[in-house]
Length: 121
Image (cartoon, rainbow, N blue to C red; front, side):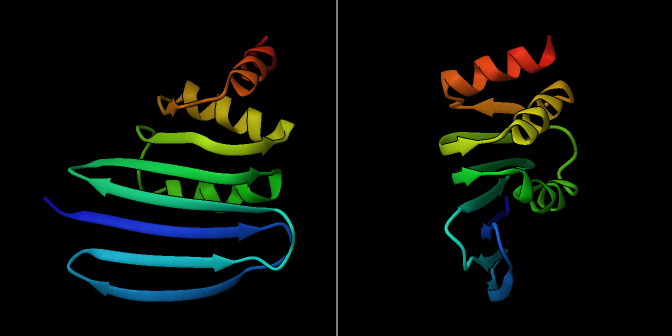
């Protein structure tokens, strides 16, 4: 059983890409931010199951980078939102679409869950 872990830090302003070492199935990617709003993306794949943990401010400018990370995982993945502190309407719509396609939203805060429900209505 292989394990892969990717960490990303994405920003509101610009991205610098740095690549860490790759050994024994472990690959790390880090995007550093130079603005105030950041989102860290931790990706862990084990046994065909991918969990993506999001940490910080998840804003619409982060959606495209997250989509790139998800494109190789198919529709069945887990988004762990426990440490997401801020979202905007585009993020809520993105999360609703992910869930509608079969993704699991883990540790979704009540205010985000309620907002997703209102966007679906």
